[in-house]
Picture 1: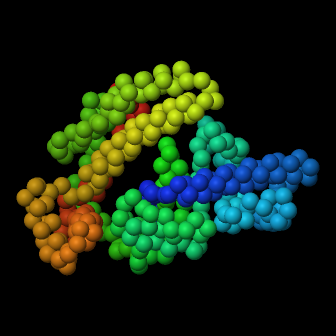
Picture 2: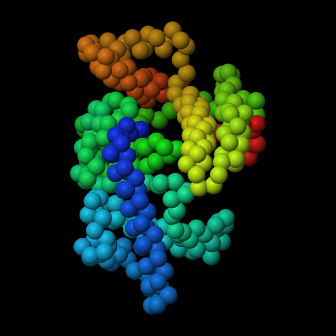
Length: 337
């Protein structure tokens, strides 16, 4: 069957490419804010909303007059930013209808203007996009190197779009592809109950060891306090304050990454078949014998990833070992970081 899947990895841009990426995020933010301002203006005058197509025509006309810098970036930046604005309004009106029907929402979420102070943001590109083992080619940006090799799929998939985003000074690309996968085999193992913990992340009912809690915030709290003090003492508007702000942002991103990594590993351990160490080694050896012998270091890394992917695939043999139902308690547990 065909599925749509996203692959996200970190970019390794040059100084010139970094400037181009900043220009692209600024253009996408400008197009979004321009479209929001025009929608509000037209609605006040006529009581109707202007569509993304009409806004695109306005910006295309201004590209040849007072906005010539729009020619230096891909047209997909402006189009996708305006489409996202239309989608934001559609989501707003959908929540309004759901609230009238009785469904509760904390906030209706009326679209707001984007600010550079909240982050550089992101932009989405459509075709043509070409993916290689260690690099990716994007329209108007050229070839950008990747920090991780052989992660993005290069064959057997249809590339739909690529979203470039910035977080704590690092650039990431998320490639959306359409690929063919096998029909998954339903698990038939015993159900598992998961009890959320405080000292440990979770305790399972099948007798496995408790899932450890990394306590990312507590581990980095002392350093975070020091960075925050340094930031508060810097003069507003100075370059040192900007450097301190990036330092705090990088540490917050590290804490978030540790938490995400722990959650991904925890969920993977729940859905995969639990095997003793001896069986795991024998199964990996068997899978390695089915693949061609690697000759270079790059082929060795690629082979290891293929073995790991096949090791976790659902098969009829491990279906009775995987739980068919996972029950989680619905509690808001306040854990000590």
